[in-house]
Length: 232
Image (cartoon, rainbow, N blue to C red; front, side, top):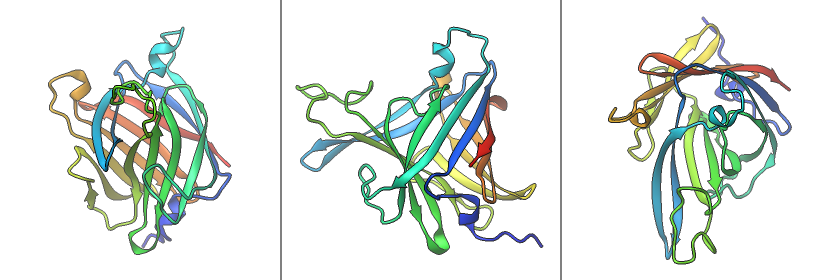
């Protein structure tokens, strides 16, 4: 019988922890998806679903580049996290992002739900002048930041899949593979265009390290792979 420990063992949240990844891309353009909630005043809000590409691949002078660096770290606790106020939350700082994983992100947080239903939710805030943000007669002036959030890790028996707010995005825990916890993120699409294709991201989390590998596939073909190079 495998000694698993606790879910939190596989997702470190200590202040100062730094992760460095090497992202390898192929000739299949990797996709991203987010749902951004924009406060519109008087208790109203607008939710915008955004599908797109990671622009780092397209802004490089050398179009043949296939490897990109990503580094981020936890810099402290956070009392306010966009539209949330979790008691236990961390603020992160993106140190290097060659591929554009966190393009246009104003602030980045991890919300921690402890106990038997341990969960980590990632929160990203966006400036109202970000491309795609709703506009008023004043443009983006005097508007609040937008907020996108999605579940990135949870503790549960294998076979559980969680989707938030009837989103096309879901996260499933498939069990233990090679001593690591194996998750799959799925974004359903209608296939009417390249941006609306269904894609999956298989993720492996190791004890004491967190996410060590991510493989995105579109129509069965690998588009990008994250590989952990260092955690400190």
